Image 1: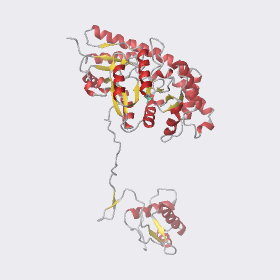
Image 2: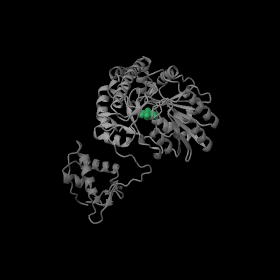
Image 3: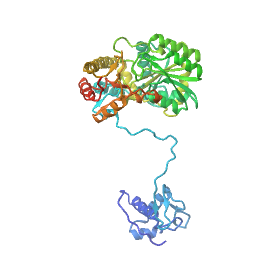
Image 4: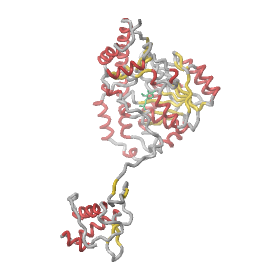
Length: 485
Ligand SMILES: Cc1ncc(COP(=O)(O)O)c(C=O)c1O
C-alpha cells in the first residue's frame, strides 16, 4: 500500500501514540482490512512529515497491541485476527456495529426495586440503630491511632479468622457480657456473611432447615441458596412452640435449626429459659446444630440480658452469631461467629474462597475502641436512649388506645421494635403509610408460609429515630388505624 489517509488527534503528548491511534481507527473503520499491507515507515514518515523512527515506534506499539503484524523484510500488514471485542462485521459496509451482550444468568436478581427505609421521613423499620448518636469524633481518634501505629506484619496476608487483638477484645466482651467462654471466634463482614458461610459448609441440596415460621428472610435465603428446604416451626406468645418442634424433628431429618431466642425476630418475644433448655435437649437428642442469632442482645432494658444458649453448650452444637450492625451501624460490616473448635477451621477455610484476609485496619480501630472502654460507654448511652424511645412509643400508642383505636401490644423487655396488633388490614396500613412518608412493615413480610398471614400485626421500630420523630410519625399513622366500632 502506498498511502493511508489518517486523521491524527492530539490524544496523547507522544506523537507516535497519536499516529498509532489514527492507524488503529483506520483499521477499525475498515479502511484497511486484515492481512492488507500498510505503508512502509519511510513512506508514511514522508506523508506525515515526521521522523521515520516515530512511525516505527507507532507500528511497534500496534504490533504489541495485536493490530499489526510484521514479517522479516516484508513490511507491515494488518493483523489477520483483530483484537476487537464485541464486534460483529456488517457485510455491506465492512464497518463494525456493536450489540449488547446477552448474559446467561444462573442466579437472577428477583428483588423488586424499592426505596430504602432510610429514605422515608419517618423510618419505623424495626432494628435500626440511631446512627446520629454514634460518637464519630471519638472513633476517629481510634482510626487515627490504628494508622499512626499500624500493625505492619498483620496488614499482610495470613490469619483469616480475623485480627487477633480484635478477636481478643470480642472474646473478653462475650465472656463478660454473654458468658460465652469455650468457643472459637471468627470475624465476618456481618451476620449475613456468617449465615452464608455456615449454610455452605453444613448444608447440601435437599437438606431440611427448621426456622421460626415468622422470621428473618435474609437467613432463609442463605439456607435456600445452599439447596435447603425450610420447615416452619409454629410460634406461641412466648416464642417457639417446643412440642411442634419436637414433632418436626421426629418427622423430618432436619440438619439445622435457626433461632432468634432472645428477641424473637420479628415478634420481639423472649424465649423463657425453661423453653430454651428443652430446645437444647431436643437438639442434642436429634443431633441437630442450632444457629443462635443474637443480633441485638445488648438492648435489654428491664433486666440484664439473658445468657444465650451458647453460654451453656456442653455438646458444642450452638453456632452463635452476633453483629456490630446495631451496636455501631450496619455500614461497619462487622459480625462474629462463636463456634466449637471442631467447626471453626472448616468455616475459615471455606471463607478464603470469597475473602482471604480480614479488614485489619478497621478491626484494629474497633479493638482499640473496645479496649479503652469507649465501646461499652457508647452501648450504655444507646441503651438508655432506646429505652426512653421505647417508653415514648408505648405512651403514644397507649394514648391511641384511650382514644378508641384498635391496637394491642406487649411491651418487649428489650430489642428495638414493638410488634403491634392493629386488628386487621395491617398490610394496607403499611402500604398507605408510605404515601405519608412513613416506612413500616406488616406481618406479611415475615411469614414463611403466606397462608398463616392474619394481616393483623405491624412492626414498629423505636430505636432509629428521635422521640420527636416517633411522635410525629405516629400522629400521621393514626389516621390509618382502625377504630373499634
Ligand atoms: C435477625 C437479624 N439478624 C442479623 C441482623 C444483622 O445482620 P448484619 O450483621 O448482616 O447487618 C439483623 C439486622 O437487621 C437481624 O434483624
